[in-house]
Length: 362
Image 1: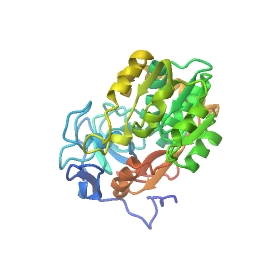
Image 2 (image 1 turned 180 degrees about the vertical axis):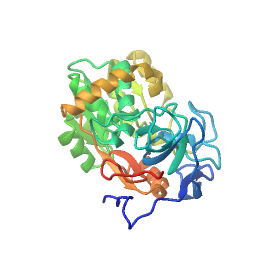
Image 3 (image 1 turned 90 degrees about the vertical axis):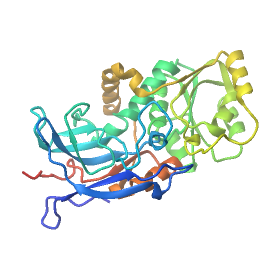
Image 4 (image 1 turned 30 degrees about the vertical axis):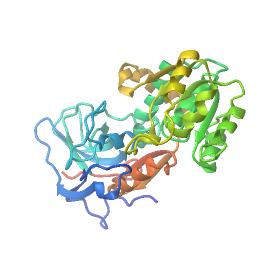
């Protein structure tokens, strides 16, 4: 359902800024009690600042790690702080020469309806192709993550077999399609029959297996009769257990995420699989490499050029899972971590100006 336009007599411009704060640190799976919805005054831009209205907020698995107290590759969210996240925003007011009301930008605003920016790390969006929300997905961090992880670490070659975990998600769906463009045989793994149909029939993967089925290991062996040359890791857990025995000599494993473990409060039960893993790494000369997209920031222009062409030619397809209302972000993040989303998860915080003309207040 589309939201109503904001420039009609029946609606009013907001007078308060909605924010979602981290109220406590979760142990295991997050709950709604770990978040707090609050209202503050809409900030006023000072010299060298602009006021941004959030249109779309990105929800991503990495946000779970930001809720923890321990160290990570990026700063944690402190108790009482606005949850962090990237957004597509409209410039409402500007005291920056190169930005004007109505411009659309991407910025790390966090989970709030309005924010201030000095223009750093707030690039304008090229509106010539695709919805503006794609800047949070296929044209943004998830798409770039897929691109650099696959090409730099996976190094796909024609005729090789690649297995992609979380194949219907924001990253995995792009990984598999780029691998097909590079001439690979692509096998996806996803949660549920509907997602698997989408991955195979819409995205063009050669096969897709449901990780919820108990015979995943046998099904994967059948789908990969010549073994696995590249495994793009988004999940961990039982999916990795099924993949490991099928890895070929010199297989490459880009490690992008481990969503099956993000809510873990301790070590998993059962035997220690580390010796088995280390033996496989040694005997098969496997390459495991973790990476973060910003490690490859210099490649973003190449990615942007390639992705624009692939989207324009219809060679890359993309699915979004959009929910209206900032207040629903905590619930939707919890669902995302359970794998209950279908496509790139986005919260629509305010109406999209590509659909409705929004006139900023003077």
